[in-house]
Length: 262
Image 1 (spheres, rainbow, N blue to C red):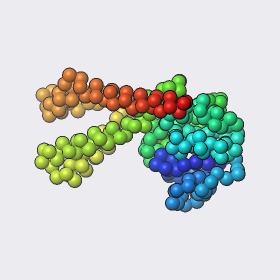
Image 2 (image 1 turned 30 degrees about the vertical axis):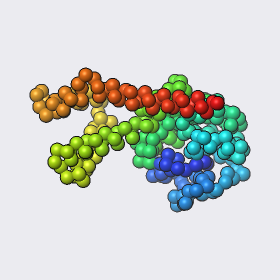
Image 3 (image 1 turned 180 degrees about the vertical axis):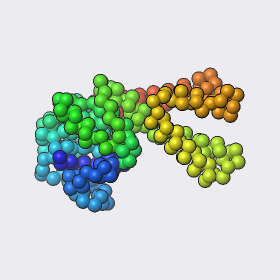
Image 4 (image 1 turned 120 degrees about the vertical axis):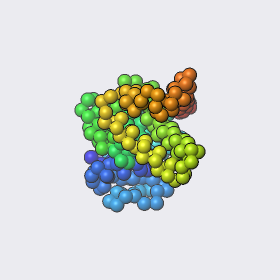
């Protein structure tokens, strides 16, 4: 399976890193990027789209660049499955840009693809079950794929799984700042916050219990954790803050899609 990556910035680079870390042959990949200084060893780096066809074409460009890039890229997508990580670029827009593609798949990953830990929201057009299985197998090394029932659900996936890491990082920073305010050395508080979140997330990922039940198990009645949770749970403010955060991100995704439609 030959793979063309058009635009290898943060997200495209993370996906490429994940595939290579999983043992995929670098010779399978061609990267087209006008500014990338160098590609990983064995990966072909070009400045313009070659006069070749590929089995998979990954769109990693900026969404606003699609109208400019599409005419030169279209020949390379003939008979290919196009994977798009472009926020706001709907399947109808992609179909108009690449009418001879064998199939179209919108993919919403995050940077944890580089270490095989990304959630991946997927929605496709033009693929049968065998085609979906091939795409799923290709993406398996990058994390956990979730096929969606409706395209507009990608806005919710973008908010939760795509933008979500930034929200988690802000929470980690807040925990570290809180530890510093309690008298810990800032660097030490940062290390403790990172290690705590890493362990808690790993346990949640492996456990069959719900996060609510895991929190209950950590909490002794009248203890320190209960005192802290009483602040978090007061008036439902924390849950409302998270819900409003995700809603804002989701709504922005819908706005970008509307703008792309013109």
